[in-house]
Length: 339
Ligand SMILES: [Zn+2]
Image (cartoon, rainbow, N blue to C red; front, side, top):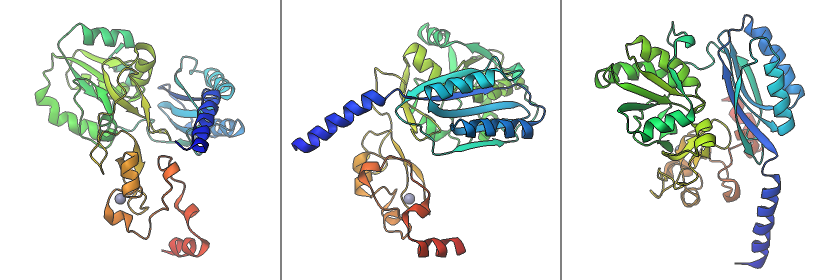
């Protein structure tokens, strides 16, 4: 190895180790009714802005759902801020440490639902039975008879899932009621149902729906994959966990880190996602470093030849793209904006 490069890598590694745990990423939700979401949201957003926290927070009359990144101190300050609000003292946080803040900006807005299933009349108080990570693992290891459902989208379960789980081929959470109509015949109503998602929020609604439809023994992984990874070392989970921030995937089971998915260009094992470098396409796809080199970060040869291709930067191929206008000069920008 070239000694200069060698030195640089060693330095980078050292640097990485020392800054590794400076930042925290949290994921949380609380189905506590909010009477005036607009006002609540305004106050919340102001507070987050002042503290320079980045991430995404959705607020609705049904509660709050968020993911934020910042320094340890700021994140702790936020936890205390939220716990201090009437009705939110019991909010649970899933916490990860990371070397940077994996969000480019702050989004804090009012939505119809904090997690959109588009199905009326689901009261989250009527959800399934919570299984703590340890209990979940016990059910798996005791060889009980159950059916396990991955309550996430197809591109999430593709890079990682629990062994033996049903992985519905849906692109949105709100496609789940339709999927259940189809699957209804195949899952006996007296069968023990286990379900999981990333942090637990989707199960809060989907478990209610399953119970409404007649399944009796409905169980959900409390705190989702992320909490399970922390507490049970991700045992029985294969691959990685998709997350909705700039990291895109995070490790779950430290014992088996090999990718379970394939690079869409080379066909070799891979689990990193990138957006196609052709801005008109922007497709999210699984791509290895080798694959990214071959098609310059694009999903196809056609995209590689597009006029709207972002310049290829091998070093940062796996970092999320900046807004398209960062890549072009003013005249291009003007032309595009006029379209
Ligand atoms: Zn493409």
